[in-house]
Image 1 (spheres, rainbow, N blue to C red):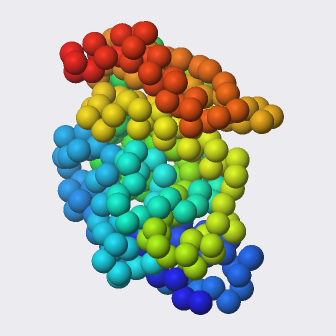
Image 2 (cartoon, rainbow, N blue to C red):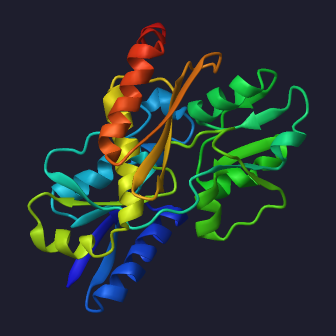
Length: 297
């Protein structure tokens, strides 16, 4: 069986397709995964800040379109790039595995950043959370694939990247400080893979189910429910991280002002992860002032 996999062309995206192929081969030796490389808006424009381009979705829409129009059978993503709503005609068929969900500071340890240090990142979430703890920090925008960003690290006191990207590409900078979620709460679904297929494609859907990681799926579903409840119109920094404790999902969710002066955070647990994600979002919106924060933003 041949399955065409739409993907971005970066080294990390190609790694993700290769990893999915490895996972499928352990269950279905006769399945072949054929990459279909797609250029996205986020790949074409590596200068404009992501939040100005529309945030989530800039790395996935063209990849999803390739599946919808029949050029590919599945779309392989970094799950953190997915908007909360799956487009009509597609389904999130599998979350195969999750790597380290944390962010990593490259070039300097968090505790060693001096007064007024400059941190490079293109993420408003990373800027908001770090400046909430250290208002003295200066920030510089930085775009491009992870190799490009690391190549520019010497021009700043530190650069922030996803720890999973370092691990998956075998990149080992001299100084790497993996930041605890109490310092920098990860982006929704960070570190996880996500595979979509057409809603009516039963055969491909069944194949993908075989490589799903049930623990990763429950955590990602809880985080994505949190994102969905906040609403597609929310352009403030959003973060969430879920882990399993026995049969319960433990979720920390946060929403903040763009400048990090206000950061609302809540932790709860429940057996029902998706209901938990929605409940944490509603609490932050209705009980903690999140609605006013969104209106002000």
